[in-house]
Length: 114
Image (cartoon, rainbow, N blue to C red):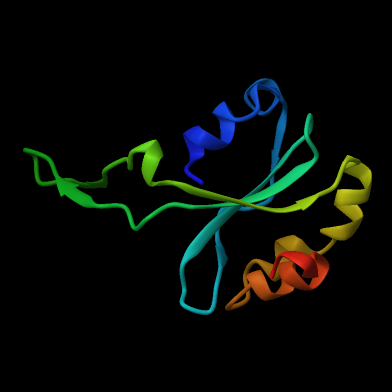
């Protein structure tokens, strides 16, 4: 589902605290993902943003154009109602994220979603 639908389908998500666990997770094809956890719902989700377009301004500087929210896809990979338990499950994520196909490490901890 897209990011806006994700938040609209449960308002508790929009008002909740969120914890981010890196924005450079990769799959076997090299796509990049962001991992976050919503405190109110216990949802651990991945968000993939399409490759950002690069544009040049009048001064010759290059910068990424922001993508519309409708282009960002969200996939809930687990329901973990307790933050301390989530921290235990994700112990070592900051090292794992640096490896190629780091999503494989993540899916080993949450196998039902692979």
